Length: 80
Image (cartoon, rainbow, N blue to C red; front, side):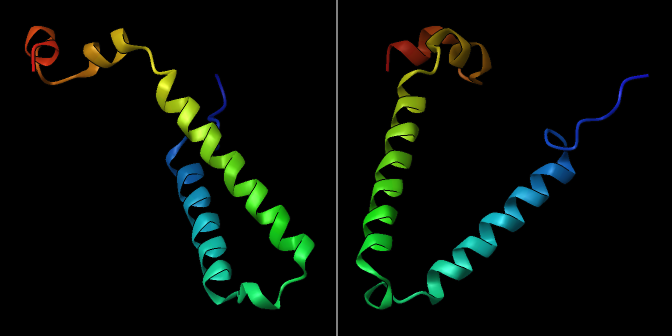
C-alpha cells in the first residue's frame, strides 16, 4: 500500500493557497516606504526572479503536450 503524498493532493493545494493568501494579506498591509532600503531591494530582486522563472516556465512548455491536452483538434489549433 502506497502512502498518499499530501503535497500533490487536494489538501496540499489548499495549504498552498492559504499560504499565498496570508502572504497577500501581509503585502497588502505593508507600506513599502517604512521598510529599510535593503528589504525593498531584496523584494525587488525576488519579484524579478519570480517573473523570470514564470516566463521560462511559459516558454519551456512542450507544444506536443499542449496539443494532446487541447480540446480543439490539432489541425484547427495550428491553422488559426
